[in-house]
Structure formats: structure tokens, C-alpha cells
Image (cartoon, rainbow, N blue to C red; front, side, top):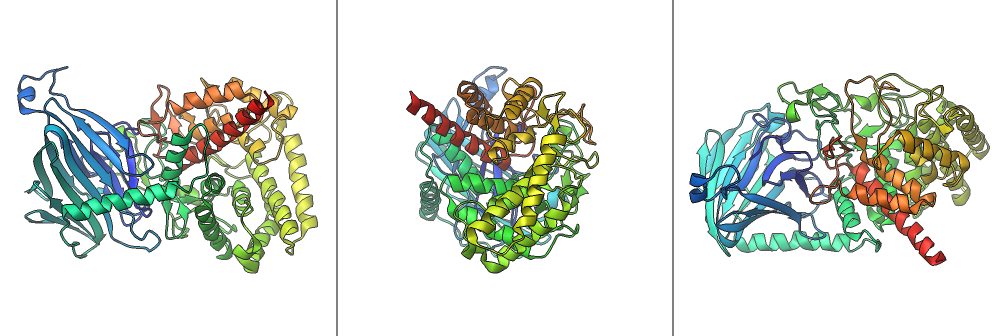
Length: 622
């Protein structure tokens, strides 16, 4: 078992309230309970020694281990895959004496009802020959800060921590033994034999579930497979990239808190944008921006229920009457709508490959980012939303935000990338304020709702004129990051997507060409150049995968189909072995940042849909 495996060497499982990462070596080294943004139970990703892990691995054959050396047959080869169109993860172990598998999943029972009880099921089986499996369960509660007590009774272990209990129950020929306050186990299985362990995490003192048996676990497996097949069966996409689009949709679903409909930005915290650097943030929260853009992707795939659930959550934030920072909305919230996300440094954790500090919470929550109002109204105005869904009170709260925006759109802010280098007049922020007012005007007109349309229209038009004058650089012949600079910014790839400018407008084509010369590296796209536009942080970062897929979208809509398809196909080669993406791609092709990243997967879906549409149009023209 390697400490600190590559970020991309993981698959994701979940039950729509929390999730876990399992490495390609069979190590569960990230899991929080009872929900995504709760303290960790296993966090070896952030500290191999203090974070805790739950490993099920295959031991190399004893005979091979004796004679083994570099390159010998003692090595266990691992392979990992998803059961097609599900969130069931299979890790395979190929040894000289046999082939074994660990099947990992989390049962999805009643995801819309909040519960403190969550289960991880790990089924061990040998499909050829004989394989010896080894188990280590080493929980470390509260990000590794809290001790625990162990009670071991035969095939059942109970780990008791402050405010939380974890039960480990073994099924079949699997022996457990104590090792301090942790548990080890082993089982040698021949072809056709199975064993299993079920980890149940609940509030302190919660009773263990009845001992599972093989038949019940078989039914659990069938039920979770059936759930995912039925869910993805609602997807309307039938394009050229079916498999990767389905995987992205399942990933977005896995990272949505079902009781409220709120998606999180990523499953993890503290994974760096640069190995050994300080750009390590907690992304286990609901960003208004990310989640609102996900609405478009999910709706376009046919998942109206998920889109409307988030829109109801968002509408409630508006009706709550403002954020602690005094604005109508905060840029991010906890999944239950709580706006308090105090940032703290967990200085007892070493960080992934010494990437320190490790932060929990997110201090950027209090920033002013005016673009969120555009994304919020954009989500609420998506087709399929009628006045009856939000009701009159919902409309009043939305209209009040647009009235506020008329007075506040022309303010410097921190911008989409949450830089900590001071406020600027960011072009993207103005762009999305334009979107908010434009979509609000359309809704008021279409739904015949009361609104100061004259005022909204005047503000919308003033924003457009300002962007076209102050956001445009004659020197660069491009739209720029913020007023008074010539720095480019890939966030402006959103311009044609939101309808601010046509994909073939000369100014847009010139901007796209400028980005291609400065921000694009072998089809991968950087957000901006930190050396030209200091962001208040040390170090550098990789290319931003969201921006690469937005670049593909822009190329496709501009009719540059050969380049767009080439860039898209190349980007797909950076997906990990099970089709997942982190936030960034590093200089040698490694995935960096929190993982998996919702922003990346929603943009992948948008790019695939745009490419399919434009390729079909081109084919119909002959």
C-alpha cells in the first residue's frame, strides 16, 4: 500500500448524502460522516499516519515473496473499474496464484431523508485460483484529532469516538483481530468463495445493525445496481460520447446532497493545485456558481428533478433574506443552507505529499463575487421552470435581488477565481450581472410578473456598453480579465455560452485567438497568468479542466470543429482510469486539486452536447 497515491488513482462511491474514495489498490482513504462536509472518519489522503484508512488488499503469494525482487512475480497487479452505469466500484487483484476482487458500494435506501447512519459494503471474492486478502481498519475521527476505543467481539468490531460510532461486521471466512485500537483481518479465498465486511457509521452509542448474511448482501448489491441503472436510464443523451457523459452525470449525482438537492463542488478538501504548495482549499460545500451551472447540464440530460431540487434550494436562500456579509446571496453554503463556513488550519495534518496548510472550512465564503447573481438567475430561468414552482413569493425575492443588482453591479469584487489579491472590476463579474438582468427581464415578460423592467433594461444595457468599452482591449484585440489591464482570463469563454455575444462575432473570434496564443498549452487551458495578474498566493497551478472544456465549447460553436474535436478527445485522455477528473492538470499530465470536481464534469457535458450538435449540423450540410 503506497502512502499518498496520485490524486487520480481513486474511484468514488456514495449514498447521496456522503461519499468515499477508494484507491486503485483497494484503500478507502477518504470518508466523512454523516454528510459530505462533516469531519472525516478516514483521511489518509491528507496524512497517511494520522488520517486513518480502511484497506483491503491482496497479499503477494508467499513463495513469490521469498524469491521476489524488483520485477519478480511477487508484485500484485491491480485494476479498477466501475460496474457499467453504476456507482459500484470493483478493484481487481492479479497475483501469480489467482485473481481476486473487492466490490465497493454504499447502499442508497432513502436518500431524501436525513440520517446519521451510513454504510460502506466491501465484498471480497476470488474468481480464479486462490487469493489471500488482508484487511486493516484504522479510523481516525474528527480529521484525526479524536481518539477512539475499540470493542472486538468475534466478527464484529465497534470503534467508539466522541459523538460517533463505527461498527465493522465481517461475513464469511474472514477473521478479525485487534491491533491496539484498530483492527486487522485476513481471508484466503479460492475460486467462487466470498466474504464481506460492512462498515456502519452512526451517532455515538448507535446500535449495530443486525449481522448481515450473504443473501442480504446479494440483495443489497442488486438494489444499488438497480437504483443506478434506473436513474441513468432517465438520461436523454444519445450522442457520440455516451459512456463518459453517463459517468459525468453519475458523478454529479453522487456529489449532490439528496435531502436538500444541493450539489457540492468536490468530494474532498485540502488536495493541492500544486504539489507541495499552499493552494489547498475545502470544496465540500455548495457554490452558487458551480451548482447553478450544473443545473443546465443536468436539465439538458433530462434530469429535471435534480435541476428543480437545486432551484428550490437556491430560491430558499434568496427568501432567507440575505447572507452574513450583507449581500442578498453568499457565494457558498453548507449543503443544508448554513452560511457559516469558518476556515481553520488543521496543522496536525501533513497534507497530501506535504502540501500544507490543510484547511477545513472556506474563508472565501465572505467574499463579494457579483457573478453569482448571474449564475443564480440563469439557473432559476432555465426552461421548465414556471411561475407556479417558485410562486409569487419566490418571484418577489428574485425581483428584489435584481433591484439590488441595479444599484450594485458596478462595484469591484474578488471575481470568479476567489483570488486573495484585492478587488478589481472583473469583466466576468460584469458579464454575469448582465446575464442576471437579461434573464430576469425575459422571465418578467414571459410570466407577466411585476417588475421594474425599464430600470432593469437600462442597467443591463449599461453593463453591455461598459464591457464593450472598458472590458475590451484594443491593444490585445480581446476581452480582458478586468478593466485597466491587458491580462486574459479563460472565464470569459462563458461569453458565447450565456448569449452575451455570438460565437462568430469578430470581437469574440479575436479573443479566442488571443487566448489560444497565451492561455492554451497543447489544447489545455490555464485560467489566467498569475505572474501577470497576481492573485495574492504563492506558487503556480496547472491548467484548469473546466476552462479546457469551455474552450472546446467555444471552438465548436465558432465552427472550428476539427480543432474542437481534437481538443476534446485529447482532454478525455486525461481522465483517470474510471473516467473521473480533478480540478486541474499538472505540467506532466497528473491530476491536481480536489477530486472529483463537479465544475469539470458539468463542463464536459456541455462540451459534448455542443460538439454533437455542431457535428450533426455539419453532417446535414454535407
